[in-house]
Image (cartoon, rainbow, N blue to C red; front, side):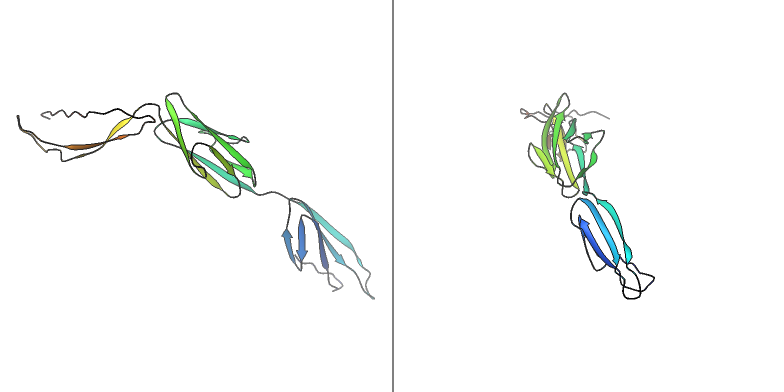
Length: 189
């Protein structure tokens, strides 16, 4: 910050409220109104100039909370205070220091599994001090088995021949699966 007087006399600055001034540097110290005042006191030749004051509001910073939905299941996430209503509104800015509580609600046929990112485990409260990201993972409320890999399948097999293959089955569901059986059907095409 700087100012010059037509008299050439020095101009000094003072601050009140949510700021301080040192030399030409203004430092914001608190939320609220900051008032900066410029003074030129005058001397034997020049009369003092009237003080000039300018005020402005120092606002609390805001940070964005971003929610991502993951997994094979479906669901939604809402926040207290309001703002997040994912999958529609998955990112919102909150004032610094706000504690945001996220609630995961599984859709019919799904289970909420866990939080990751700025939250872990089964509950989620985030204190906004920087931009944050949270992932809510949902799974089907049933076993959901997928064939992850098959090793050593034969390229061709003759009638009456035997062969072996190894497969890996993974459960993407939210509940345990009983023993599974994989059947292979061979066809001429």
